[in-house]
Image (tube, rainbow, N blue to C red):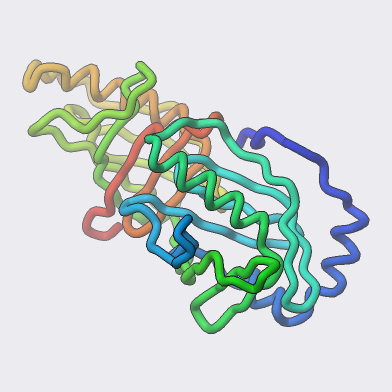
Amino acid sequence: MARLLALSAISLAALAVACGGSSDSGGDLEANGWQLSSILSPAGALASPLPGVFITANFAGAEVAGDSGCNRYNGGFTIDGDSIEIGALASTRRACEEAVNAQESRYLDLFQSSTRFEVNDTQLSLFDAGDTEILVYQVVEPTALAGSSWAAISVNNRNEAVVGLIAGTTITATFDEDGRLSGEGGCNGYSAPFEAGPDSISVGAIAATERACPDPAGVMEQEQNYFTALENSDTWTINSGRLELRDASGALQVNFSASDGG
């Protein structure tokens, strides 16, 4: 998986000192993945994120990473008791709708202004220097890619756009636990080997049947675009019953919804 663009270096010595003072609070922070449920609005009140936009944070060791609504981000963090300091963040450079971009910018600014955290069962709260609660997260239950099944909602059309499926067509994907991906491409059945890490994926050469489908119009091109999107995929994320595959630049390749057994 390609690395995110590094914006600044993090002092290893400082991280080592901070990790030594992590205490039990840090253990709670790092024990779960978190999905944003509330963000401090410009009006000064906590509000829900935009519908259908998922923002996450995963703390592990001395690094935090996640989705900021449009892009992926990562960076360093240090803790001392319940105090937290978020270092400079690196991010992919994908552009989204104006409202999503604005929320993302606000989230990252608030995230880096965090000075204190609280973990209460399934909730994480971050506070600023004035002790105002600025971000609230809920626990995200880990979901494995292997053993899951999905139906595609939209596919990258290889023309810098992600488009919905042609009416009357179905594209599916099942990720077997033995490292085999299989499904329907809209016209033909297909299979391919795949390897997946915690958030990385590599899809090997795709083998497909050779049936021709003249109807509906464009189905063969859509199928080829889907196969290309699978082979271009570099990362995967699952949020609220949706699977997203993205390439090394962070561009969305395929968006799936969970199907029966997914």
